[in-house]
Length: 314
Image (cartoon, helix red, strand yellow):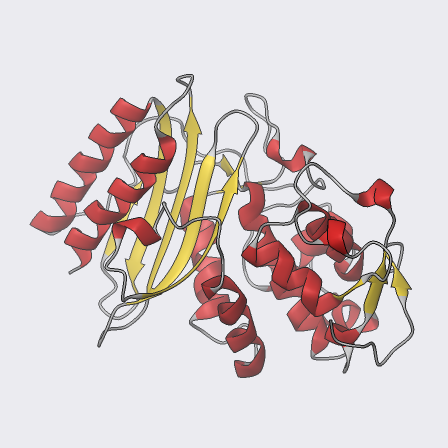
């Protein structure tokens, strides 16, 4: 673990000056999120889709029916602009895909705080949760901010997410950061593990596939982050180990995939990825689910949905 260049910091650290400057003048974190999207069928399908996209829309609807519940899809070839959509403007829990957002906010704060990633965060056994594969090993010495981001993105360590939140102003500050990116839909409200819980009509910790994908595109393909920070984010996401049977499983094994998965308390399984097909512009794919059948085959559904999307985009 990298040694700190700055004094150790506890999880109670207040909002860092760097991110505070970034957020200055933006909308209030308490600004109400957009209302939930419609819960109907696929009325958000592209107008006059190509035959390949129209076929994909039908196949995604069939996959959703077999899975039971809702399957949210947004995929785009950033070169051609071709989109595949299914319930793309409906709200779903983000679950641990929110770890991409907090890590991005930390990287943005780093721009105004040299040495931030080397800062050591101290915590106690009381901060550990059910899924603490990395943080549980470093209670005695703490972890650097960089190591916490890596743990959050590569093994979806839950305490790592919670320990990063104070650096960006807690969930409210993270939502405010998203507003600076032009994302008026996604919202972060709670910590792990309660951010994975929902009830009908609850919009906390939700986004839509289209809104999340637009933000992911800005962070990983466009210039919302500096080149250095964008490269670091993609490096962590490429090393993710928790979604190998999701989007990655639906693509050729030689393709470059940077992704983050998430799972909820009611069987939700999500995956968001930036993909570099050989010789082509990047793709962005976001798959969110809200299953209703006990024991739903959600993970295989996401892999098959990716195969469907890939046929439409190639």
